[in-house]
Length: 82
Image (cartoon, one colour):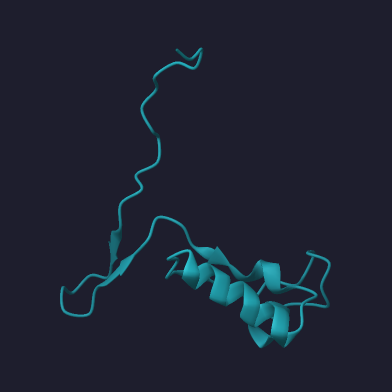
């Protein structure tokens, strides 16, 4: 017996359809890999991070031009450049 209450999950772990026209829609998982993790990394480490995300069945990658600025990096777009 456990002391934890039996609460419903607030996260839908199912896949989602990304797209609008029905022909080119893409199924994506419930979690995205955020590229802000690339800040301060080299190419080898960046590749390792992406490969790990793929191994964990993540197929949605979050990029933003601001990644790098204010995250200990050199400036806007640092993560995307890597």
